[in-house]
Amino acid sequence: MSQPLVGNWNYPTSIRFGAGRIRELPDACKVVGLKRPLLVTDPGLARLPMIADAMLGLRKAGLEVALFSDVKPNPVAGNVDSGVKVLRAGKHDGVIAWGGGSGIDTAKAIAFMAGQTRPLWDFEDIGDWWTRANPAGILPSIAVPTTAGTGSETGRASVITNVETHTKKVIFHPRMMPSIVIADPELTVGLPAKLTAGTGMDAFIHCLEAYCAPAYHPYAEGIAVEGMRLVKENLLRAVKDGRDIEARGHMLAASQMGSTAFQKGLGAIHSLSHPVGATLDTHHGLTNAVAMPYVLKFNRPAIDEKIQRLARWLGLRNPTFDGFMDWSLELRRQIGIPHTLAELGVKESHLDTFAEMAAVDPTAGGNPVNVGVPEMRRLYEAALTGRL
Ligand SMILES: NC(=O)c1ccc[n+]([C@@H]2O[C@H](COP(=O)([O-])OP(=O)(O)OC[C@H]3O[C@@H](n4cnc5c(N)ncnc54)[C@H](O)[C@@H]3O)[C@@H](O)[C@H]2O)c1
Ligand SMILES: [Fe+2]
Image 1 (cartoon, rainbow, N blue to C red):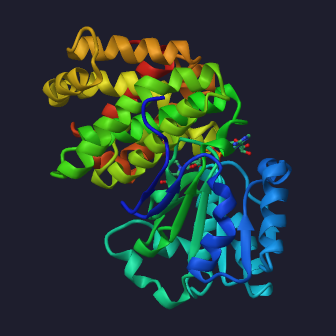
Image 2 (cartoon, rainbow, N blue to C red; image 1 turned 120 degrees about the vertical axis):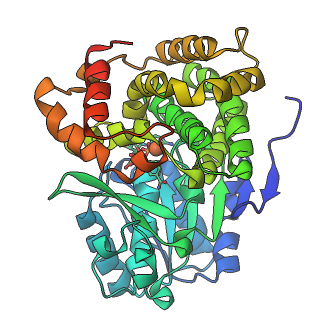
Image 3 (cartoon, rainbow, N blue to C red; image 1 turned 90 degrees about the vertical axis):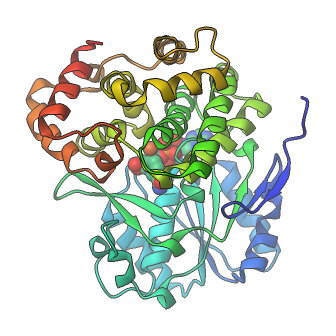
């Protein structure tokens, strides 16, 4: 290992990064001023020793912590509503957001909704809807990621599914950003290989779509290209050996870099993925990874030169658009990502509805080539059958 994987980062949020740093959780609560935190996570994680250990450590430090774990993968508004009830009834003063994207998103939304009077959907990430919120009603949160993918811990949004419309809605407020992140790669070692692959590709695709989005944001582009290099060097290692703490550490950093970069925009990979995830409950990162090459090929006229620049940064043997496509398809194959949406349960009969939904997904606006319903339909057809 050439460089110790430790640091105190304040960009964009305060991040305590490094193996074993979860021991600093009671101190982080003290710094944020939490005395009665509600620890929010999903039921799978709630059963693991890491949660019991954390609860014990917090209680020993004199904190009155309670646990809430009614959180499903691809969380729904009902999860947020029940959490808000528990939060208010227990007079909690903040939230510890623990998990993958599902746990952290739900926790952030609970802390945000603590003192709001309007319904959750009024705060969807549209125009200035976030200004409808009462900032005094937002409680602070501390985030603890256990997957390296969504980067929700360094983001200002929560993705919550509306079960009535089968849509993934982005709830946004600048103050939804956690006050402190404890990024401890040891917490990610138990993540099974399949989820390591899917979440790792989500991190990669956040960087890729942010890099390709047309807005002017050189900071985000710089972060995105280095995030992709970290994924290139470490994702296969982490999938092959979950205990490789160096690879896990770099993947955790890359995931936070992805969510930092995507304030520049996302694109059609996410637009295609959201209707599939909201309807069939497929894993978000995995669904993105399946959709990726079809969108890349479609976007080629707008991104060819940019991808060549990226391919040089990544050190690809063939630093061209085709070289990048070949490398990304090979990575996808090596980590066990299926090639077609059919393998995730998508059927021809879904495509008309999915194309309508994808075209109005807010991420579609960041795609470097305009994508309306007919283009989305063609992209789905290609991804359904694996036609590249
Ligand atoms: N807020 C954002 O900016 C943002 C960005 C992208 C995606 N998302 C959302 O995040 C969600 C997906 O999050 P995710 O990919 O992190 O998966 P997840 O949170 O749904 O977790 C998947 C599964 O992995 C398990 N798990 C998590 N960490 C583990 C560990 N260390 N050891 C063992 N098991 C573990 C969980 O219990 C769960 O069963 C989706 O709802 C997606 O839409 C949010
Ligand atoms: Fe994503």
